[in-house]
Image 1 (cartoon, helix red, strand yellow):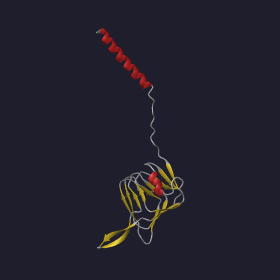
Image 2 (tube, helix red, strand yellow):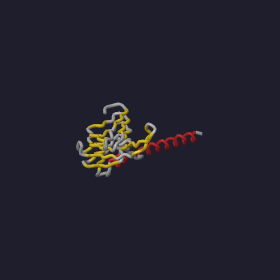
Image 3 (tube, helix red, strand yellow):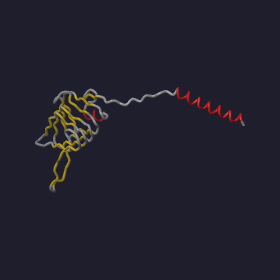
Image 4 (cartoon, one colour):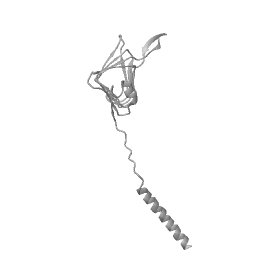
Length: 167
């Protein structure tokens, strides 16, 4: 009986030694958190919409001077979208039109040219022109700064802001 108990002790010791040695030789894998990157338009992507679609939260999209024609801008991530120079990048938006019932008849209205559905988003230093529609921003700490926004054909551009923080 003593021999069985002694063999069990040796087995337990051998298993513990094996596990300890195994842990020493287990390779350590370092997982690095992705860091924010800067995306350049048009160098990395030809359009602002394409850059937005390929960006991640926290990224900066730097738009070089020039004219960028887009249908709409849908910003659903916490991004910094900045013109290289104040007013140097011009965004011309052509949102789709749709019919809406108004006082018993149908009228043609524009979809929203810019929709921001993210907190901590920033859009700054652009000249923005849209055929019409309302700019919608829903989120906290959204910054729309140093932008000149105009509407075409006598169409007013309205701004709808929802959320907390500076504008």
